[in-house]
Length: 282
Picture 1 (cartoon, rainbow, N blue to C red):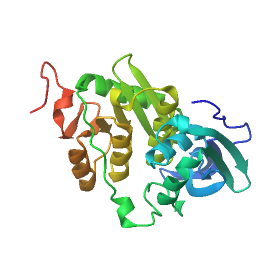
Picture 2: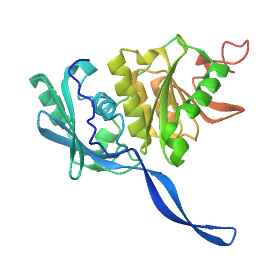
Picture 3: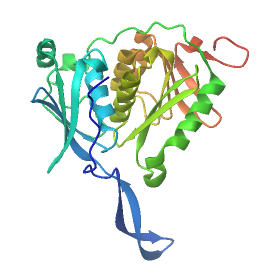
């Protein structure tokens, strides 16, 4: 992708040090804590406002591009001809531009929302949008269970912001070919995944070449975003919702969750995860 701007120095820091009074073991002491920042991020296209989301002010170009792809506003990163990250008094504006042929698509997908933290579907204009068809992911990719567990451990080590705050989600992309691991963090789990999608799109890595890793529970919007990316495997720390499981099954996505140091549980399409000498899990 060309002509995509980078965030200026005036952006707020992604973490903030604040004063706190600690009550521990019956004693009171003055102290401080590092907490994650969240700001209003307005996304616009050709000077037309589309959405306002609460997000961590880091990797915002990745977020803007990934959000645009996840929403189906554009088909590829190169469709966005410019992306300016502009701090304003109320937050940050991601001002994107593209050709006229996307105007009709934008009107059909238009949102009027102030996105609540943790809800990637808030503000949709109709229930049909929330339950829109999810593309089928057809992939012969397989990854060993050991490689996925190692990737989850490596992602935890790469969570710089969460190590300081203990309050930020992460999403990652692991491709066994070349041992690629890309990690992005955000207070919103769906925002973190959008950042990964945007980073992949700009780097040219195909979503179908690897697995999505999540530190959060798995809900329907994360399945939708992963399917649009074309990634055939999701591994998550927390549990999936029943709706997400049905969607993953229908979309052909392998969903493993409850990932711990000793392993994980596979809920759908287990044949893509190799266990030991086995080519699939029964």
